[in-house]
Figure 1 (cartoon, helix red, strand yellow):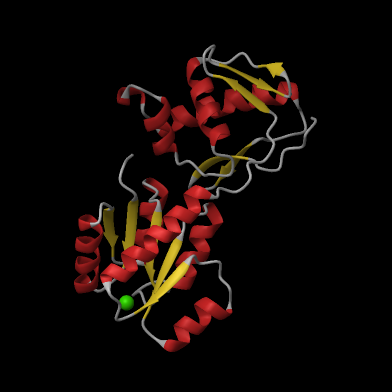
Figure 2: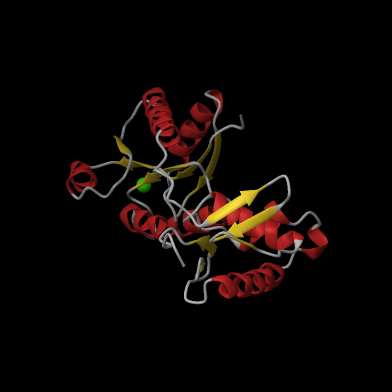
Length: 230
Ligand code: CA
């Protein structure tokens, strides 16, 4: 199993260093950014498995960063708070954060909390929605509402990737990495062009549905709310 990737969003280098050291020692793969904007960008480009988010950041505050992270995904978030009123907000507003730790904190305790969060998020995934797709990996075929789609190799790879994690927003870069095997072909518009042809094929089966959603500036995701019948 690969190491869980943890993004640390913290503007105090001393705290970030301590955290990175503790995480690395404990088998995590830490990454560090010092601002909210950098965090959002990093999470778009290379999503972490978990985010440690300081509330007091120099640009956006942690609550705003959290809200924007939630617009595009459901990565678990552990807040770092420095003041009692911040703790009140994390707890009182029921932001949906997975946990919080008040500064000063013991790195060991924080790592233990991370383990709990990760166990929770991997052990009890949300009940998978019933999707109108059936993937036959052996034949590299996908059915949509029972109808066999005629897909090119890359259309198949794209659709399979999206279907396997409904609701998850994939950036064009990540899709290129996952689906295309030659970086020479790797242009953002390559992904867009294939999504376009793929959409046309899906439309031919169910004209009124749009299973592939565009998330502006961030990428594509499979709709989670497709009806049981077209
Ligand atoms: Ca801070």
